Length: 343
Image (cartoon, rainbow, N blue to C red; front, top):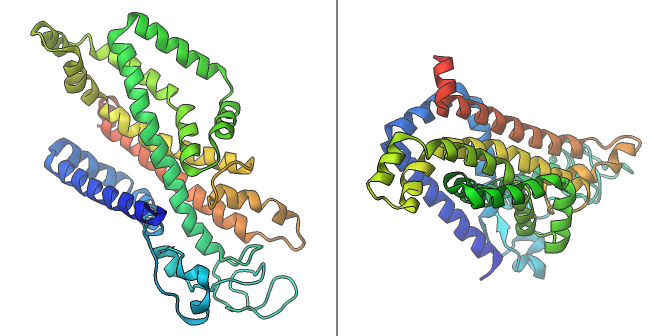
């Protein structure tokens, strides 16, 4: 199956999954009240996150179509799947090299531009529109944060809950593995895993997941140690309920507020980690980190080419700040201890 078809199917699954989750939240009074309180506390941050999500989904929906105009005779264009974001810009929306934001002539040489006063954030060294590249980077950021979180959270829940609930040798083995991973410098381990697996988006997400699960696993272990001693868990055990059923029915549901908070806060850290990897030259193509890395040499030019760095940095800062604000509010709304403090 072709890559753009897989991407479209994933988008469709995410949309249907989000719709189902919205229906489930609406039917649950506790979660619907929590969501309304979250929207009341952080409306702007939620709107910013939603905007980035919409842009990422539009960048993920791709299909082929017959090119029109000057590019109609281009064989490559006939077989290229373009996203909704790509179609928001002309197919030939490029210049020879740098051009300043809303400029009419090239940055070097002063020759007239093919699209004067049309590049809102200028163009990069290859003549690509910076706004276009910035919008496309949202997909990579959400891919890194979302896919890696889907790897980290189940892995951390499995090891943390198992170690905390059963204890003894399982707990000892968990501490041995987690302590070993925490003793290795995280960045060096991350680079080594990427070098072994490759530099593709999935490989980078897997590497980030392997190096990021220990922290939440320890939190889940501590909470499981506490929950297994509660009266209703002891009563279920006395009635003969199996241990796996107790974990599924009683332990994990009481960790869901931690899962949501961890997902939100982990997301921003993972996006920044990818930016760090791009700075080292082993990130994902098309990411904001790669744009920032490519802008390093542009700062030494005379005059300075600043718009590529500002666009990528602003987008990265906006997403991370919005996610952190939402995570902070989610912690206050979902954690019973902080809810009592704010009342």
